[in-house]
Figure 1: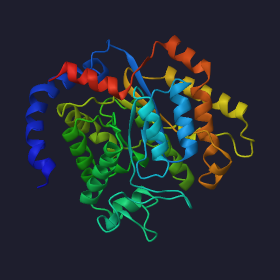
Figure 2: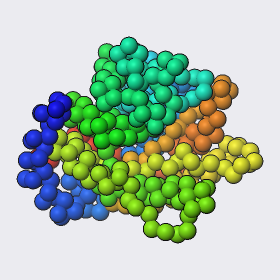
Figure 3: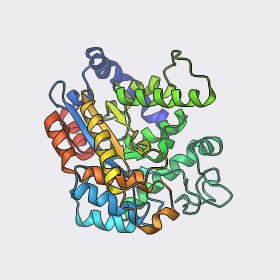
Figure 4: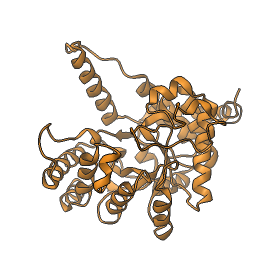
Length: 356
């Protein structure tokens, strides 16, 4: 039995019975439990991949200082982290967490684990870098290695004078297996750091899973309008949310993570005007369709310089995110819809106040 099972699970069971179960029966959103009005739509506009490159830093910084984005997370194994952390030292009000990084997906620009190959051989490929895919991490890495790397990334942040407001996951790797999730929860609860755990109704996330599965079946010629099973990730979501809440952390009601795939049709030149119009339209629609509760809306706002194409071909969709965040029309939609913008720091402050 590991540390989490010995020290956390026993009292979680008691808290679930005494506190969380009655709340679930009444089905308030986590936003309501945090003190927001009934029916409130609360959004975190969150920039992933800060620290990955100079271009990523430029985009994340502009999105939160000039635009409506209000949170970001940092990839600690990457080489441009010092630049981003220097910005955070100068702007301590910025909401910034750790984008826990267990993969290194690009072809030529890559990074390895902070714990080193000898301490976590299952985390690295033949090049000594983190695996390129989530599936490879699941196949080769142990939960002990994953936990060690999570803790190393947190330790590096703290050594640099950067205390993260939350933890989330690059490519969703820490949420890929029950064993990885357990260690992720352990670190967050032990350190009192909020976690990206969509434990509520998950309306947008369920739609994403369904749309992705339909596209997969269409490619295989196997989509005939049949009923689709609920993914295991969503079946476990209420349980994970309850554990995080019982551990004293705020919990998301929903997660919106589709903007990376909002791209122009093939063959259409990705001019700034076209990217801006596409992304403003899609983000506006997403905001108008938000369900009550706390929703984390993920983006990858980047200001691609000429060399970014050597890293990734994703520059256009990332630039579109930045262009949308700084466009005044998006702020107007937020105001018209009465959407409340919140940060992870604020959610944790509210969680402490409500107690229980």
